[in-house]
Every structure is written in C-alpha cells, then in structure tokens.
Image 1 (cartoon, one colour):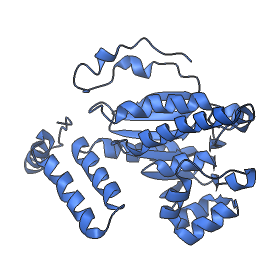
Image 2 (image 1 turned 90 degrees about the vertical axis):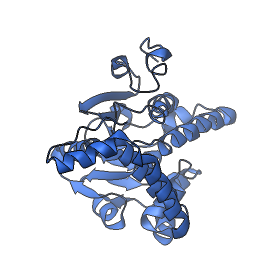
Image 3 (image 1 turned 90 degrees about the horizontal axis):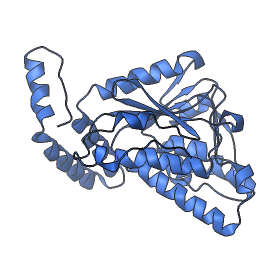
Image 4 (image 1 turned 120 degrees about the horizontal axis):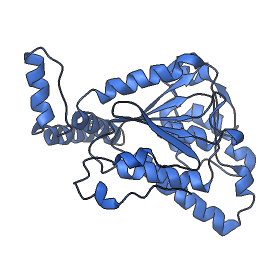
Amino acid sequence: MHSANVKKSSWIGNGYDSWPDEFLARQFDTLLIDEPAPNVLRVMFNRPETSNSFNTVTCRELFDVFGPLEIVRKRFRCVVLTGVGDKAFCAGGDLKERRTLDEEEWMLQHELMERTVRAIVNCPVPIVAAINGAAYGGGLELALLCDFAYASTAARFALTEVSLGIMPGAGGTQNLARAVGERRAKELILAAKPFSAQEALAWGVVNELCEPDVLMQEVLAIASRIAGNAPIAVRQAKHAIHQGMQADLATGMLFEIEAYQRMVKSRDRQEGVAAFNEKRKPQFEGR
C-alpha cells in the first residue's frame, strides 16, 4: 500500500485545523479521493474489476480516511461516498479473498471492519452516498452508514449474507431496520431478497433517484449546499439528530439543547446573523 510522506505535525500540530494538500495526493490501492467542489471530499471505491468489493486493504484505507475526520475541524465540510464506474457502488466483501482466510484471519479482518464502521458512524462531517450501481452486502451496509443517499435509477440493492452462511455484520441489521421498519427489514434480510432503486426510494433507503448521467452532479450540488452552511452548526445539528434518534423524545430534546449551547459562542453564529442583516453571503470559517 502506497502512502505519501505526511508528517503528523503537518496537521495535528496546528490544532487539527486542516489537512495537508499532500493527503489528497496520496495514492491509495483501493480508493480514489479528490475534492470535486470546495470543502467537499469525495471517496470512491476503486476496484471496478471486482464490482468495487472491499478487501482488507480497503477496510484499512477507509479507516485512514474517516478516522481523522472525527478531529479535523476544517477543510472538509461534507463527504461523498461512491464507486468508480456506473455498474457498482460496492458489491460488499471480497469473497475470493475471504476464501483464503482462516478463522482467526477472518475475525481479525472483521475487527478491522468494525473499527472502520465506528469511524464512519462517529464522523461529525455529513456523509452523502452516491449509489451509482449495485449496493450488495457490506456495500449496502456502508451506504446505510451515511447520513443520507441519492441513487441511480439503475441501482440495485440486497443484503444477501444469510444465503452465504453469514449475516450482516457492519450495521445492516440495525440501520436497515431503522430505515425501512422492522418487518420489512426482516423480509429483506432473512430472505436475502434483492430490491430495486424504486423500492429503495419508496421504503426510505435513499432520498432521491437520479438518472445515471446526472447522479454525481446532483449529489455534488447537495454536498456543496451543505458545505456552504456553517460547519459548526451543521456538525452540531447532525450530532443532535443522531443522538436524539437513539433516545426518547425528552432525552433527545436535552441533546439538542446541549448541541445548541455549544454553538452559541462561535464566530460563525455571529457571522451568520451579521450577514443576514447586511444582506450579504456569510463567510463561515468553522470557528
């Protein structure tokens, strides 16, 4: 696995304010990353020969990308997760690789995946999935970890693990049920039943369907809109929604107030109000 020679002090030493430009130049083995719009990080599964399935290296590289986002305050205000090409978002775990793993290696690989899942779940920056094709198994689970998703009209979905003697293990049993309801999730998971893009939209798995040739354009438009808002306010709102949904309403309201109070003293709050009154576009700094 290739990696650029980036010293930790280049971003950790300055208070986690930004990522060095060298990060975007890093040559990953299974991912492509770029900044297609200001403050938008695009992460692409780049194994088209395997329908963008993920292997052990992919798990490690995803962790390398999403881990720092939990503490870096600036530069990226929205993340887009997608796949290279127009056939597959991500077909899940690479079963050819897994066939070569013994039991201990399988468990170690999954432990790495669990850490990657936690890094994605804990990411304070909004993550939008652009589902450009098949999202099967772990690929659908990764999409469900995102804050919301747009999909190509040609996209296809399935959690087929039980047909292979395993079960979803990257949040699928929890996140699909939260998206579509318990009874629908049981049908889809226990029967390993595939479903269409139109069904995904109707059931709440995705927010919007786009023609394949305009999917990325639409996703970047919504990502740029998010990135143009006050980053502290966006992060705190995401935090309040996520935490509140795990609790009863009264507890969720307390999470909201806590998130709100942490935002009040920010420069961005002052800038936003000033810009509104001065009839100009705000210049948010994430401070």
